[in-house]
Image (cartoon, rainbow over all chains, first blue to last red; front, side):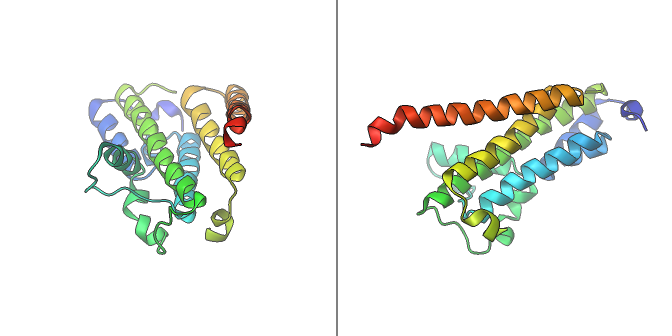
Length: 131
Length: 63
């Protein structure tokens, strides 16, 4: 099956973008970009899980200051990993230690990376161009 | 997973971060395996060099 098998349109772009946000790589999977889907899922999922395993903090929607709000936006980008954060890391965050602090940054970086892949999935879905 | 990442050092976390971000950037910005491998290697080394360079630069301030 070739990459051009999926014709591009606005609806496909939106569906791919939302799917890619929910599960990293899923948008590209729907668009039959197999290698991109696998790499994005493994890299972003690995980064998010590593951040949680290091007991990094996850910002909530009730953040009060600007930094926390930005952190929330970044974390939310990780999609399903954000919503399952408490199931993946049941012990909760421990940012009193340096490892936990690194974990917070890794998880936020996973969210930001996923937002980039969402934009790419939307662009491929909308235009249908092989990338 | 906790055992694998829980005891990660600062440098270990840096290596892991540099690796996955370089790979993702390579797939986002380049087409073709050769181009992607070249870009991922370049970005990975750049992450390491810049981090180590900044570490050396900041060392006197820790004294």
